[in-house]
Structure formats: structure tokens, C-alpha cells
Length: 182
Image (cartoon, rainbow, N blue to C red; front, side):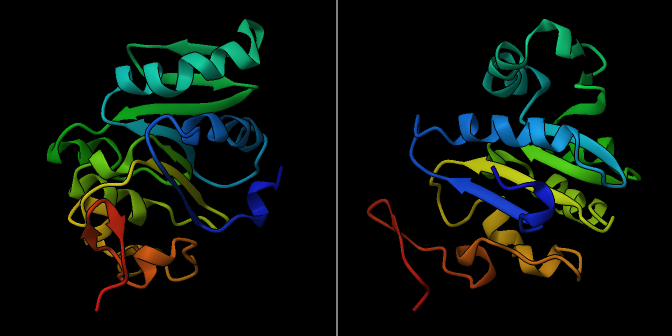
């Protein structure tokens, strides 16, 4: 497995339903627990409950009960002696939960469901050198938040984006396929 310092600043796993995107992020989350970067480490998705159901429940089975401690009401998580926050992003007002926060690692479940204001605020909060974002999404319409936010417009100037579709404005919806803009 490649260490986070060798990854792009923004890493998106996009694929069909049940194709293993979230499962593929579990080892990266474990690796990121040891990643030395400034700022907070966060898991985010539509709600704390959906993050627990989609990501954390399986992750906890993998790491074992002695390697994590999770407070479901506060969203505070200790994973391998690394402090994490679990933050829900269900509506446009959710950006207030990360306003003022410095984020070093963000693991985002179903980023195409995130409100635009939350996603844009998250990108601005990822200012430490070496900050990394890992996200999952199913194929979606070209009008969802990350696509219409233009990642390259909001990412920190030192970041580079590994998602060709976003950095080159190639989102197009045609019978379930994505094509470059004409």
C-alpha cells in the first residue's frame, strides 16, 4: 500500500454500487492514523450514523476492539492512538461544523451527496502541507457538488488533483456514461 505522503492531495474512488470503494479505503484510513500531518483527521459523510454504517462498522471489525474508541454522540474517535472527528454533512448549514478547523486528512463517504457549501469549506480547511482528501462516490449526474465546484478552483494552490474528470471539466451524463465536454 502506498503511504499517504505519496498520494495526490485529492483522491477520489468512483465506481459502481458495491464495487468495493469504501472497502478499499479501510487500509488507507489505518495508514493515515500514523500519517504525521498538521491539522485534524476527519471522517465525513451525510450523517454520523451513515458514516458509522458505511465505513466505521467494518473498519472496527478489521482493527479490533482494542485499537479504537468511538463516542457516537460527540463523533470523537481514537484509532490506533490517533485522534479523529466524525462529522455529518447533511445540509448547507453543516459547513459550520468545520469552519475554523484545520484539516490534515479527510476521509469522505459519498462525496457527491455532500452539500456544496460543506465541500467547498472542506477544501479551504485543508491547508497544512501534506493534507490529503480521500473520497468515495457512485457515478452521479454531472451536476453534483464536487463536479460543479470545480476542485481545481477551490483546492489549495499547492495541491494537485488526481481526478482527470474534475480538473479538466469532463463531467457529462449520457446513458450512464461520462464523456469529455465537447
